Amino acid sequence: MKQKKTNAARRLDELKIAYRLMEYTVDEEHLDAVHVAAEVGMPAAQVFKTLVVRGDKTGVVFACIPGDGELDLKALAKASGNKRAELVPLKEVLPLTGYIRGGCSPLGAKKNYPVYMDASSNSWDEIAVSAGVRGMQIVAAPADLQQATRAVVASLTF
Image 1 (tube, rainbow, N blue to C red):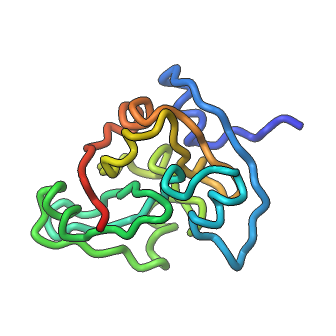
Image 2: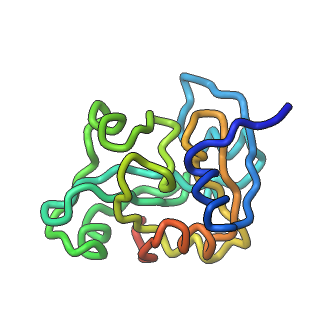
């Protein structure tokens, strides 16, 4: 069965960045990254979730952090040049990004929002991020994903 390409995967194709797609069964009750990691057979710290955050100066940014991590909003605010940052309410995620909860990717969103990636990403040969739909992850080298998203790498978790 041929996998359907997502905008996120097409973006990596355009940049000639190597990646692989991993599909998994979606459980509507468990959309969290820890569950996804178990489904794809990777440690939760290697499967990065993409959170949509609004800074008081910059507006919307993406924070990519390990699936088992907790976002430090103060650290993100500092890294992104904001005084304050807060998670965007769930109802605003789809209109802002084109993505739904459990399928939010730092690649291929409706707008090119700034991406901040947790520094722990560099301790892995490859990490997974959402491919932009529930049930599919993109697995690639952290440096390649950082290049593709123009990510700023910083310590973003507690």
